[in-house]
Image (cartoon, rainbow, N blue to C red; front, side, top):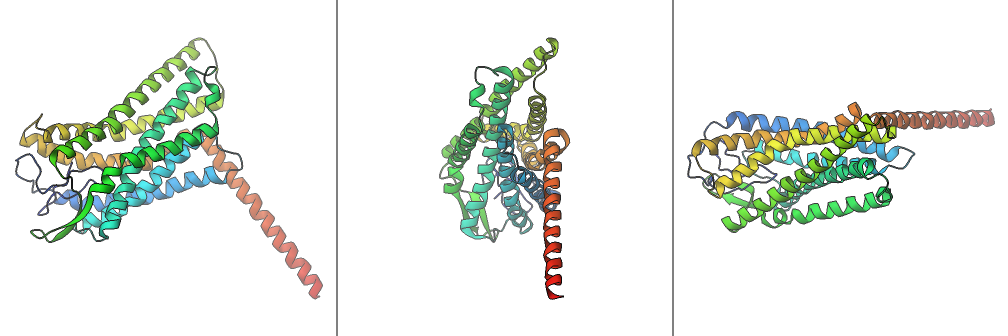
Amino acid sequence: MTLLPTSVPDFSTTALYGDQNNTNGTGCPEQDDWQWLNTSQPVYILLISVLGIVFNMFVLMVFCLHKKPCTVAEIYLSNLAAADLVLVSCLPFWAVNISNGFNWPFGQFLCKLINLGIKMNVYCSLYFLILISIDRYVALVHTMSHGRMRRPKYAKLGCLLMWGFGLLLSVPTLVYREVKYFPEYDVHACFLNYPSHVIELLFDGLLIIFSFIIPISIISFCTIKIIQALKIQAVERFSAEKTEQRATTLMLAVLLAFLICWLPFHVVTTLDVLLRAEVLGGCHLSAVLEICNQIFTYLAFFNSVLNPILYVIVGKNFRKKVREVFQQWSVKRRATLDSTRSHLSSTLKTVI
């Protein structure tokens, strides 16, 4: 998907996934009504970047500073917060790029690195959600048979593998992202320069499979089984541990937010790939997809801000951890003040 800014070629945009060729690839005339989108995007990107950085750093600080070790669910949520933090930390570079008329001012190295950071952490966020779904599925559906697998060391290993898998899926971004000068527009654009249309469609197809079809299938299966298990427990008046119930409620809220934020983007991306593969056609469809892509891309990025908000609103255990961390901080502060006062008092007595 590409952005077609007023009087500028469709170099960019989505930092996330885009085909960045000089034309829109559909044979349709380029749109000339993008000014409203180009002027509003940088402000919106900076807003979600600031909120995302503050909120996700807060979540990570709570998990790191709490005196008790993280549970399996908290290990997954902390890694999800870390992925969201890296993602939103990369977005201000694209805000500058858009406000600069898509003239990339940061050089070739950051062109690759920033886009690698965005795409890798998009993948990692998706697969951490898969791990969260599987964990809740095992906790509620296969409690006895697979309970031993729900250990912190296995959770940490799973997270490490997901970071590596996200990096592997992002290799095309590292290889094909480059800065190129377009003399007709007098800009140095950071864009995806695939060597051929076939390779472009191949990677777009892999994108749809690994960032949409597989995650949605696994998450949907686990969610359906979890809801069925909760219904059976309700009918049989069986009460699971409160911590498991709370973790499941938070997981369902996070997954719902994921679907709301990401599903429209992936539907539009799939339609765009079909359009460029000439399975679908039509200038009207092309124009609608271009606008929808921009709107839904940044709706998807908003998910990185929404997740930590859900931890506070829905996560009762997380709110408890926040209170305990502040209590720890208050006790340490009082102890430090008392120690300082005692030291000063003893020093004054010695002097007197």
